[in-house]
Length: 106
Image (tube, rainbow, N blue to C red):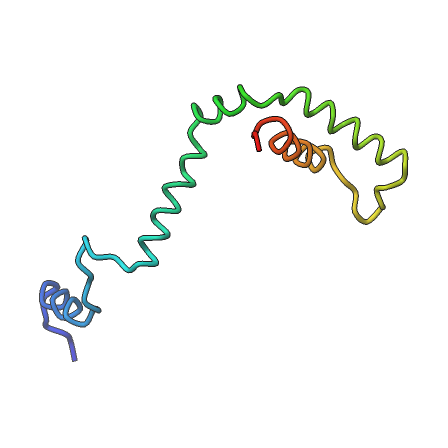
């Protein structure tokens, strides 16, 4: 038996089976929170804001301190074979220390 319904009639039938859509201005609180968080996080992708942050951070000095600290740890044997640290790991620690020690005033 062939289906003689028109495509428009089938579309109408399928539309009536769908769950009712929420009004565009009414969102679930969780979706509102996710949208707000996404908007906040997307600000970190702004090249101008990144350049402004990097202009304040003494990245060259922090990289030197990170390399020196990593070298010292390796000389002292504080770095195990299973937990090999990379300069990026130590740089993150140096950056955190710089924020706490020099950037912020407590």
